[in-house]
Image (cartoon, rainbow, N blue to C red; front, side):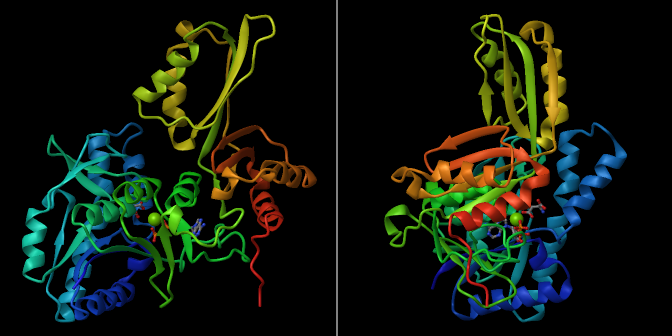
Length: 408
Ligand code: ADP
Ligand code: ASP
Ligand code: MG
């Protein structure tokens, strides 16, 4: 007997026939004698529709009410899956985040899970009931509903798997595993049988939305046995493994892209100690993640330019925050560009091999693609380029690093 956490994403619960189909997957686990916690997303497109509803109601909605609206999509699917299972003769019940409870901080819209109480669900599992938990949501200590950020059901699933010491956490989605790049952009992308936590973390944080970044970080921290599988096909999927388990190391494991990027340049910033602390400290107060940063050195020791990137979705808030500090910081111009994409190549082999950056830059140059900003980590190189070149850059780099699968 195993305890398994199964997570079903938006397309996997997109309609009633699909919900009935995944109910059969859950039934299969139950008939193997396993105890099941299922985590569900909202039906695909529903969370976007809910965001529109709030936006159309108010330009500056209260964050806490925003989360109440957003979390409602998962309420529907958790109960529908319970109903579908009961129809198959399987005992099941739905759980909202607050009923578990999944306790989070109160960063509405991107709350962080602090603790999951296991008592109630354990009691229910003992009675052999399948627990179906609404993904993407929790409850703050103030007893308000919170959501975990877009794609947050992955994090709900991994956090549940860690808290309940599950034997495995299977993420069922609309592709049959993790690929060398988004298979919807590059048809010749190859499915990976395995990928290390570290590489998956970089790919996810650089935009490969197949797993939410925080879910990978949690899985790595707690050693959760994580797999990505198809809801539609019966194929083995991709296992996320530790680096020392990876026998088949390739040069580059994947290429990710992120269109949710905004470039901000503060030009004519007076060149004195403490300027970066003022700018980035103010953004941190509003939980705005700054990613790439470049500061040019000033020639006359008087003024410098600081360029950085943030999620495009945070641009309005960042602009308001920094412009309020204009006098304190002392800059001349505030420039923005949202017509950009960040492309990243990721691979553990970068730790030991040289020449990868060179291949990347030469490939982009051959295709006449201009680079705005570069950033690197131990296993990743990212470039910010014009978004018009997104697909060209991904395809060219995919070939240049020998990642193309042979197409039949
Ligand atoms: P779900 O609704 O199941 O959570 P998502 O849409 O969040 O599914 O994530 C699955 C999608 O991630 C795929 O449809 C695919 O387009 C995209 N994706 C991006 N990069 C990758 C990658 N490297 N491998 C697999 N899928 C990827
Ligand atoms: N429904 C939420 C979203 O669309 C959470 C998820 O699907 O993981 O972001
Ligand atoms: Mg997702």
